[in-house]
Image (cartoon, rainbow, N blue to C red; front, side, top):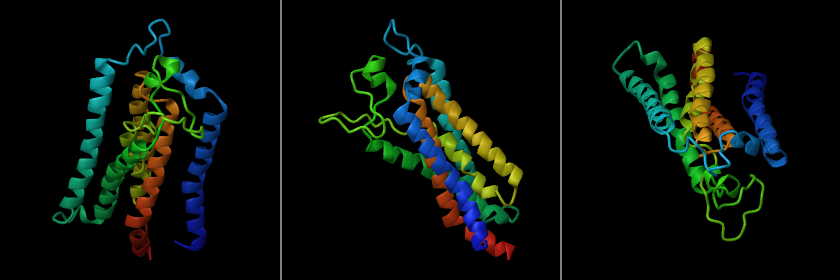
Length: 234
């Protein structure tokens, strides 16, 4: 890839997400969009979220939804392994590996970030029936705060990681790449909004997960596939 083309590639695929991250940070710090959206699913009279314990949201959307992500990632991994024995899959070997890695690495990184963050889930926050303070991303951490480990969205990250498979097929099959992009974004939001309705995450938690998974996918593309694609195009 010529230097000018590489600059354009990163200006769009990294620059736009960074601008979106700045906008999301500004919304979180200077507006109450998160609180207003969360209030739509909160019942003031009972001081709880009506769908907090729900078979539909917990068993179907949460548990089965996560299983679908595992199956998709496993399918890509199996395809990568079969490519060493199946000649028809050999040209897709590194594309399949990249997809398997993005689906695995994205949620793992999100889980590690959650492990060290102080932010609590809505159902733990005093505004929504809990006993913990509501913190914005740039707020100072109160002394003695019990960490909530609720930022960014973990469950939705599986769907958003599928979105990053766009990088695996952007040159080989552009239409398929855009289906991964749109489908992964839609599925990540589907999983994430289920948790928002349950009071288990704020909306911004899911959007941050999408941005982080996208950047991880871009980084893995740079490590695994970009140079191989360029050699094939020479």
